Length: 187
Image (cartoon, rainbow, N blue to C red; front, side):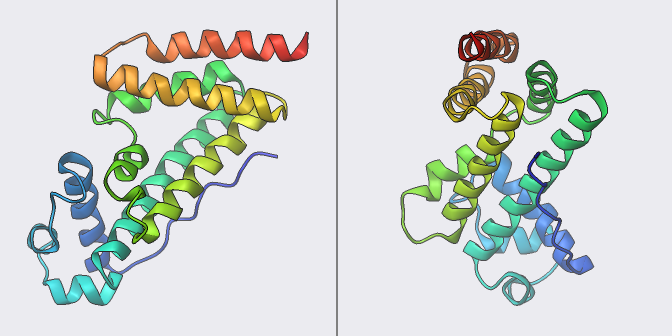
């Protein structure tokens, strides 16, 4: 059974502006490089309002990641439902998504900044998103956990190759390698 995309958590109009500003700034500049003053300014609100809505910067980071994860997951599931649950379709959608997300995976980027600190609730959200992806790959490879883990690693590597090296064929190469893995598990 395909994993259910995360729900979009409803918020107020001001909360939405704060999340939009956080999404833009955290993704483009990095979480630790962006302070709540700048987010509040860009959202045309106050720090006090930001803290009332999200509790802390960590709460805002968590909300940012959950919102981004929800959009990504919904994008994937909607496309796969429409075109077919295949590895080729998945990697095609991932390649398309990467073209408009030039800094790569927001979750990997966030992990590099807050993952090992032990102080962040966002770290568990990052793990949760990666578990969601692993479950998705399990569906795409017919339930074989080892194949799902291997294909997931191919996907993560394709993101890095696409982002860091600008390799336009990275997702197609990963899709081809994933097919080899699946064929080996079936044979």
